[in-house]
Amino acid sequence: MGQFAATWSITHVIQDFFVTTEPPKPISYNSARFLLSAAQLSDCPPDSGREVAFAGRSNAGKSSAINCITTNGKLARTSKTPGRTRLINFFSLNRENCRLVDLPGYGYAKVSRDMKDDWQQHLSHYLTERRSLAGLVLVMDIRHPLTDFDQMMVEWCEHNNLPLMILATKADKLKFGQAKNAMQGIRNALKDAQCLQHLIMFSATSKTGLEECRNGLSNWLEG
Image (cartoon, rainbow, N blue to C red; front, side):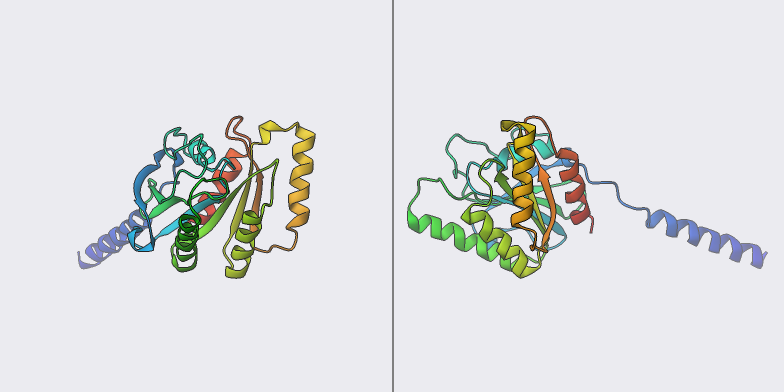
């Protein structure tokens, strides 16, 4: 009887082990929900888990890309006034402590120089000090790639060994041959950037590159 009880106990321990170690569900980007907005690093959610941030020059299509990835046309604000979003916006996902982050856009916004400097300071603090940051998605217009801002972000990722994904957006605005040539130009210009893990031709309109983008994000967020 004692041997039977011991065998029964071990069996249940093994069963419990496999139940409790069952792998978590895959990340569903459709589950993205607004979490909070932060004006500075101290306003951000607790620095735990993993998050991926989206950065891009104003008018590069960053908000449209985020809305496409999450299948939610209202998640990230899109505006005819580029640079309108001045806060760091966090979005939760169905996996605990996994987040997407929308960083302020830069470039065309008609604001004071002091405000732009303030934005850049908060962006720098976030990128430098946020330990849960698992990767950066740099959104650039495929028709106008590698602006000064884009180059700065690539160099920052390279210096800090942060994985980088580039979404070359608005690919639907070019003929396929033109888009391929533009992608090759970006690839050649960044051939020495070891931080670059994904270079994706992307269109929020035609969904070009959507699944490749989601797969890359999942690899970062799932660790």
